[in-house]
Length: 145
Image (cartoon, rainbow, N blue to C red; front, side, top):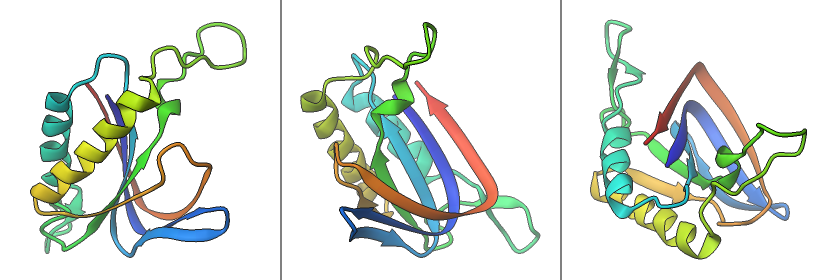
């Protein structure tokens, strides 16, 4: 799995001009599933991200998690994280898992985030989503397992 986590002030996600999800403050998690990824990996990453300390404490140090600051997570499926750009100019996606396997893992990941005490909102798997976000920092963390 490959995840890109960004700290945000606010984010909106639309499909066909219709507002699907929005968060006022927290993390946007772009979630990519690779061939052979498992629920165990999703468990591990949900726990890591729920406890990721990238929010400032009273001393201005990044020492608080999204749970500590009552933030939210917007989880967005993104197979393009598995783009293979080693040949030519058009990326290939042979390392991305098939949608019928990736979608249940994405949904499972969101449920695990919720079980870890986070308010979670999602995108629409496989849709052409339009996302507007105000990055905070910017703070961007990449996970790959």
